[in-house]
Image (cartoon, rainbow, N blue to C red; front, side):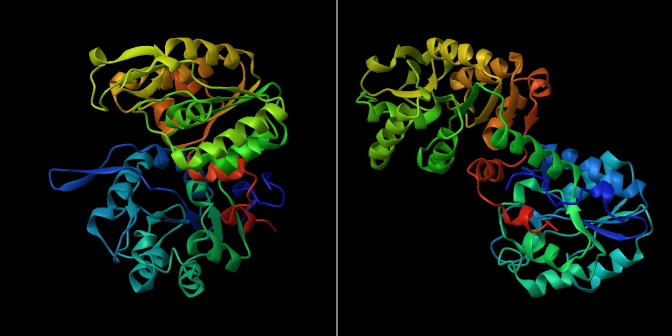
Length: 404
């Protein structure tokens, strides 16, 4: 179910003077600099601000909780949420209290000392393996800290983890934050009531990662555009010699089945007609060439879509009224192969369609394509995996548990 049916939004929850547990997604990228961990992109913290500020303004005692990374064996100083707490304090202009753990006496002391409007950030939930096991005893320890539960972590709702699934079951007052509400509404519109023509743009490395979403979209869309390495597998399935390009040999039969299904449903299935090729992933912009897909030289691999493909994809984008995009058109992390992905982002920004970018690399690419590009998108999702699972039609545990 992709609607907000029977989910209470945060504005309707009783927050005044209550201890309000907000599950946020502060799983931000970090890198080590001068011996300490530094946040390289604070977008997920910024996205959580409206819900946090709302709870503060209504006099809640705000308890924030998140995971960060994948700690292997308990606490890992490099995956502490301390840099997130420091950045949040800068953004809010208030002190953010941080206990040394997310449960136990240290957490209780900080939480029970909070006054109305004050904020604390618990330490990384995944420092306890019980979090990923959806452990009820661990959830009960978290429940002791709070009166009200708010989920605003869209990037985590597709996982049945303790803070997302077991905990809200224990809370009689539970609902969604502004970010989660916005995500469900935007993606729900794409799935349940898209204006036609509806165009899907899919890229990335593997067909295998997108089988379920392709199956689901074939029931709804008028056209699909395919780029990235997954396009190589479809082209190879049609008999094109892709030379040194990355393809999934074991998925060629599946790719043919998907192409047949699209034809049977009269869905236009657009594949690249020209590509940017090179002999190495490390090629500089001067070492690449543009060729038609049937003329890739020996030893070369397709690493981006070419100008004819961009023009054909753009023409469809301008005709569409709803567009869902997930996955880059090429190896956009490298300057030699960024043009196709950025061109698609700019074309979507220039269209009049309801445009949804499905998180992950696509969201990152849109931001790199320019602030004006990102601002013109109707919705940029904060959760790649969660947005794909919603588009597939799956019921996500972290959303379903909020329903009354």
